[in-house]
Image (cartoon, one colour):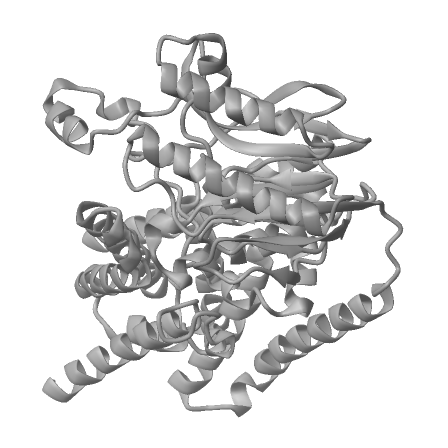
Length: 519
């Protein structure tokens, strides 16, 4: 018994090591993607060996340790945030382990092959539900580990990042079945089918990319992505003035090197004081002067500017992007998907009991935008996902369907103080470009300032941790639609609710049998 428990903890430890190392981490900033092909084998073997009552406990331990280590950089923001995420996912994984174990118990032994595929479906359903609702969080999804693999990025244009996760889960599940049963011969057909499917997808997508290389017919847009190495250390107006002075200096250097630049991008909340409000209100003299200096600077240039800024209207304060063009008036795009507890306080917790916690956070919370705005730039439709918005495929799908031909992502990643966090965030941006065949420009504060082509590949990037700029030209998409832009996450939605229905049917059948036995 003691040896058996040690082996279970060995499987748990092995699953944690493989799962963490395949994602961007402190040790390997790009991750070790090949480990994703084995990351879930120990978990499947573990679930088969533990009892139903202990399944939740093992899942709880796995979820807590995995997300505590994966998102350790949350501690830069606050240890409470890190512990909250770790406990949330401890509960999620505890529930997942319990449900998969229930599935194993309820299915007759003769359906072991069906169980092999059904647990894959349950994992996909788990990924679907955990990226929904107020606590939606995409970090840690296995498919994102392949963010540097061009073939699987191209496959994402059909079924998204979850399609890539399906391939990884399927291989892991098949291998776990072979190891568990210690019989390759009886599982040869299933294993061959799985390997053939993965190989065919890899080869066909690689060949498709090779054929399409250099076959773009879009328009070119010249740009300058401005990156400052850190955000304002305090809320003092002098820090904001220093930030703006640095951004102007870097922009002048970029425009001197490339005078034909059409678009200059400053990161998320590059200018903290509301430019448009303080321009028309001079009650706060220093903020008014700062806003005037930004507007005067932008008006003196031939290039257009996208600037991250706070913006206020009748609804309240917003995290926003301002678009300044020599040919038109200023336009505003508001962030629609806010981060709970850091950008807004969840309405269901808006009670006096929680006022102490809310006040200790000491934030000026934002209000979400109610619609997606596109910027029309010389006939090119530009959408601006702000901060974590590019981690939500459904939101980016809306932008694409409204006509977005270029994503300009602005973000402040300086708070994390982690190259792993920067790469995990960038990995999601790579998949969004691949899923919708729309290139991306990423302008960040000490993040992954880079250019992503419409196949999801990073074609140029700026060193992190430096004040600098990235110049270049990007070929804008031709407006063509991918399969994923048409169907989105519909297949995943069907799988998810089918899994719930199946589990309910099995539970009712089990209850019926037990009731009959008692009689």
